[in-house]
Length: 113
Image (cartoon, rainbow, N blue to C red; front, side, top):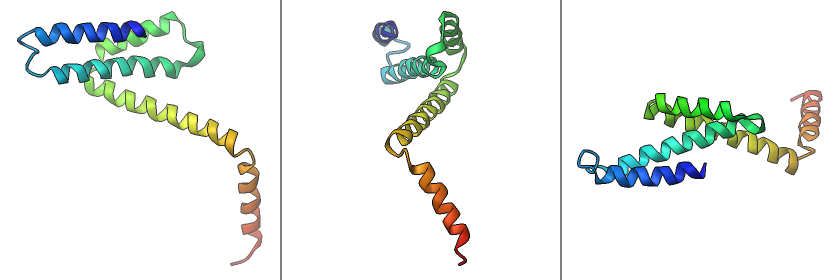
């Protein structure tokens, strides 16, 4: 994925010199950043079982998807990764929370209000 960063910076510099794209180089940078994030987060969602054909499929999707679609997918991927991370941290930091929640639920069911 380091190649993506190198390619992105070269592409942005080249396009920024073009009169067609020079009007808004920040937008070009934004599109390049979203494209890289799309590649990073999509590949990361595949996990450790990803192989070269999966990476090629993601690159193909990145070429076909609009900027808005890529941005939406990046948001969904990051949200999923944060949820997974938080669930893992809950298991580590609150190992007894499941048993505590179950006991408090059973206690609240026995006590009439």
